[in-house]
Amino acid sequence: MVRIKETIVVEGRYDKNTLSQIVDAPILETAGFGIFKDKQQMALLRRVAETRGLIVFTDSDGAGFVIRNHIKSAIPAKYLKHAYIPDIPGKEKRKSAPSKEGKLGVEGMTRQVILDALRKAGATIEGEDAPQCRGITKQDLMALGLSGGPDAAAKRLALLKKLNLPEHMSANAMLQALNLLYSPEELEQILRSE
Image (cartoon, rainbow, N blue to C red; front, side, top):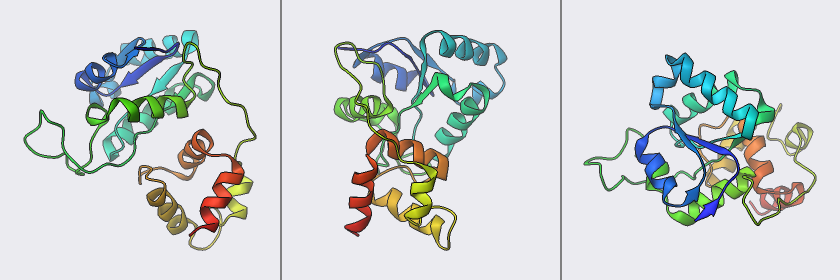
């Protein structure tokens, strides 16, 4: 079992169950869209984030991004880390049919995919040091044609698909994810190899 310092927030009990078999960390649930009405739960997330840090780990579908963005809007970024799972088509074993978008959620991910996502989010894992490097900036995205120019949105979508990242990411979320996964040099190499 991997011990993580931060608290992890997930959408529901099945996500929590999956994670609790892989990591030793406090895990809180949003009860899906219940987080929008539950002021006490949001207050708890805020307090926990300020105390030990919070890793937002929602599904890569549209609903997951709505929940993630709600949390992002309510808690200062300095207390948050974001773990992203890849877009993988399929359905969880317990379900009779796939989700609306046909993608696996957190509960359907393998142990390795979950641990990779947490590492890439910058989770503080006992016994591991976080790598340090120069990050990708908004200026880099502009210079690479991924922001502020003609067809930038189409280029971002193509890059997200190529990197197997969730297609619902905004430019800012994509920038954050790229910084978690790649150095500026690696990103340039990926774009050159198209």
